[in-house]
Image (cartoon, rainbow over all chains, first blue to last red; front, top):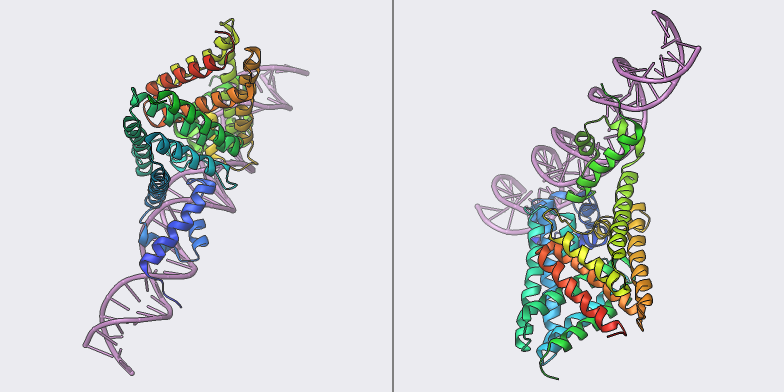
Length: 192
Length: 192
DNA sequence: AGTTTGACAGACGGATCGTTCCGTCACAAA
DNA sequence: TTTGTGACGGAACGATCCGTCTGTCAAACT
């Protein structure tokens, strides 16, 4: 039989787990399902990720990293700090409108693992804190008088759009959030 | 041994389950735990709620009903429609600041049971839709030109505050949401 | 007082959970 | 070719899941 490299297996397992965990939730997906879906023996998975918690943590960390990668790339296409902030909500509106949208992985993880000790929980919390800090830094760049306030407000809009779009119509609330963000940013920015 | 009435048992079971489900999540709490915490045999529970799904649904329905009851009471103390809208966010700010705050039960349920068929999922979705409809009705009463838009925006703020306060500092984001709501409502209302 | 009733606690069942263990097989070194 | 190494699939493990069953005992009725 064809032999896969360890790295190849690692990526494949994480890819499959990411899809299943995101679609159904981490607690709802058993390791048996991941094993079956991967088409490998379970020892292959447990060698790459020693526990389910470790696999779940890798999943959340991967989504958190991917979020910043995509957002910073989108923001990079804009020259002004205000435009960079807006870019985030434009990407968001695109995401929530998709047919496979199922909420924000980090928010979902926070409700699935509310205990402070769980490693996946920590990754989720840290991610949201980093998003807030990034918003704040961009607000400072834009010369906003109260960058803390704008950062907090934008974080509320962001999470609110993610959460609401997961419950009701995704496209609608992505657009509403986009308009809200524009309103707040325009109001906060000193330059006309 | 002292005998409890059926109604008494029913309330006690739901009370215990509500606490456990809210603190730890529905999937994280086994029926054995509910049984032990209630201090009764499991048959007593299964007589009142034939399945765990039924108990979970009763939990979510109870929280949804309690939400409207509290909010409508708080709103009733204000004479203007705009004041009634604001009352919601004042109560919200109080809730998220509490030490036992653990997120919005309906949002949490939506991520724990993303499948469309689950009864608890349906209750959660319906609740958020009803909140939006209520916001819209109040916006109409207030003479807002675009009540749909204000209702959607306030729903984003509401869910955003609930979600963000569950991840980061609850008191901070409850206050931020309160100010955001005031801004949107003042801007939308035609009377100065 | 004797009898019936039904709510009760807890033992129990099959299923599934996450995890460990084991025999096998492909490949590299000797 | 022989030997050694380690990744592999899959069986098997104990724990826990949700839900049923059974025997007991208190209360209500005759």
